[in-house]
Image 1 (cartoon, rainbow, N blue to C red):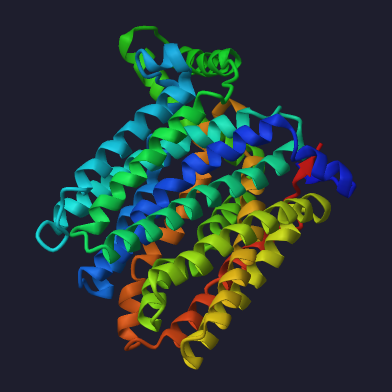
Image 2: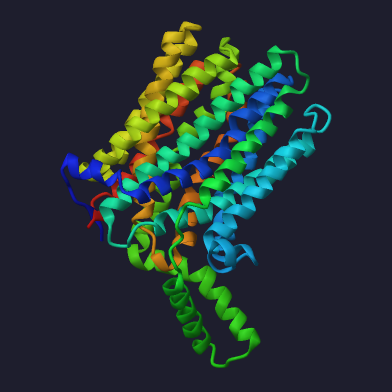
Length: 458
């Protein structure tokens, strides 16, 4: 089993200046950017078109795709994109293909009227989610493969940089989308959100240019081990022909990562891990799904949201993610997740205070900043936790499986967030109290496995 080893402050911060960390930073940004497209930007677009909270909440079901990307992760781990793989590499080839799909969807969105073509708009959003979820599989694999298998300290630091990158992509995209939409709206431009998505398409192009500077390690060892598994399964089938080869390939591709995970951790601990991963960020997701709707109903403008929730939130997230990485390395990932869970619950309660006290920019900024601090600690510990669990033979598949289970809790359950607010008759204060309580079940799961599960950075 693995356990994080303590190190000095200077040693920890020196790891952040490794050139590989800057590559991981960019990969994180590429991964985080699409979330602002189908998250806050889409939600505010629908809100300003007069659609109900419930409709906006249910539209968030498209995020459910992230919960199931592990289903095709084995294929992405093994199949190479013709031409792109040869020119760019296996991982980068997949990323570029998905980025092109997202860019095309943004162009199509720029021609859609939400009130007249809501089904088409959501369908395009679903395609963006599928492309983004597929991209995440290979982004996470490429990130993990930037670090040596036994460089546990660098892996924890890399997790922090990945989170910083993700939030940078998400927050930067949010700032640009909100300021651009408000600018277009103020100058009287019709369909200002549609034009905004064209501007966001430029960011997609820039990210693809940056991707060309990220090194992709050779994957010959991974391929050889995968083939060994196929051959072992084929030998058990007793004969060698096209059908048995296909069965061996499918079994080795899909079954191998799952068997490896349960064998490594034991059935009971493995189930405990899965329960924790599924439940850990449910409360945060409920809050996040409805946050921008709440801000709007409280009377905050798009520029207010951009400044406090996006710009200040990004600076806070970057700072405390790096500190969270330091905390996780020195105190251990398990302890870091307990602290993060408690912080998430407490910061959610600040939004209750905001809801019941009325519009206050100071309280708004305070709540958003502390919420981002909690999210930063939670995410870096979570990413490090998963990254240290994966088997390098099945990097993309196992990470995608664990990340998807976590996303399943956040997306499938949180899709009812708008309906919950409506059921509460718009009582936002009570809603945020409920989101704080939602963290408790995950911490109970973690408590039961903490004594048997140890993560070690060698």
